[in-house]
Length: 374
Ligand code: SIN
Ligand code: CO
Image (cartoon, rainbow, N blue to C red; front, side, top):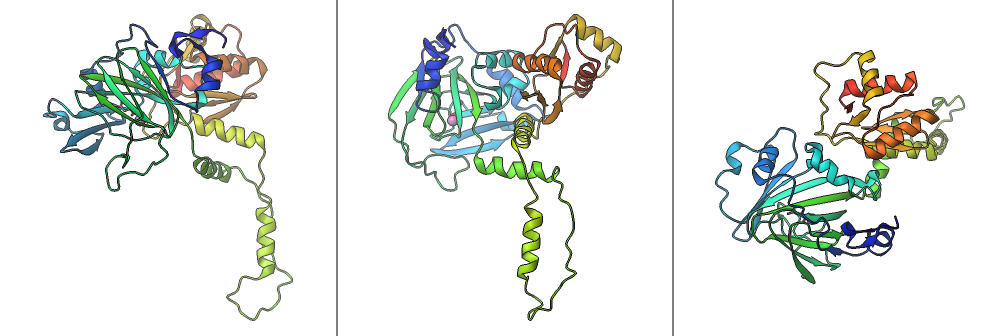
């Protein structure tokens, strides 16, 4: 945390967190020297056309933006013309090991905050228009050049009826042209507009900031499967009432007392957070191994080589609990330390002394396609 990082323009992580993170933009020239990108435009377009991949195509016609969401028909990406369009692919780290490796450079931010790596390709003039995101984002330039315009403006009103979220009145305050290896950090809600200067690929490393409303709603969903409320409605002392349609004060009181039995503690919140934040997005599917190893062979592989997470797996932990792709598991001390290290680094060295219980859990994850031997 005390090392100056070229990735952060010579700041230490602590300085970056103190002065910029969630506070103000930071332009870092040559954050990744020699970075030319991880994927070329044809490969990105092929990925955009792959089943279950989340992708968007944004075109501009006579100054108006148009949006097409994947799945695409083959002809959607033909005849796009020389300029003013862009294709954007979410979750590239789920498909490309090099992309997952790139994200490891950002492990100074907790995994629980990471969303994904989005990659865009645009010929000259392409972009998604001026907007803001509810994410922290590092915008890393791959091949080509992109002009980034930014503004701290408070006016976030959007053009009504537009297919994309475009700011109605974007007032540029600062702008730069980024080239391969340059990076721009933007806090959530900072207005920005990226315009391709030439054939341009941009890598967005996004960090989610869930809205409290979403957290609270999802917590209630989580709680509904776990609450235990004793008793049932009873009124042996029922009194006559003038208006039979009226809900009586006695009935209200009884229901209130019953509902007050719904309680939760910090452990429920931790478990909810772990499950919610590690839950794969709905379009994510895991591939079970086609010819699975037997438990004995898997154990051997574990002891010789170790295991790695599938690129799509999300693993978090908290106080003895491990969260793997939306599922919570309690682990004992030694096992917890091994699993936490697997979650931190997304792979483990050879695991010589693990408990039978841990081997069973890892084997189940292997059969589910969540992990595989290294
Ligand atoms: C892009 O890569 O074109 C868009 C990235 C962004 O503005 O969030
Ligand atoms: Co954006």
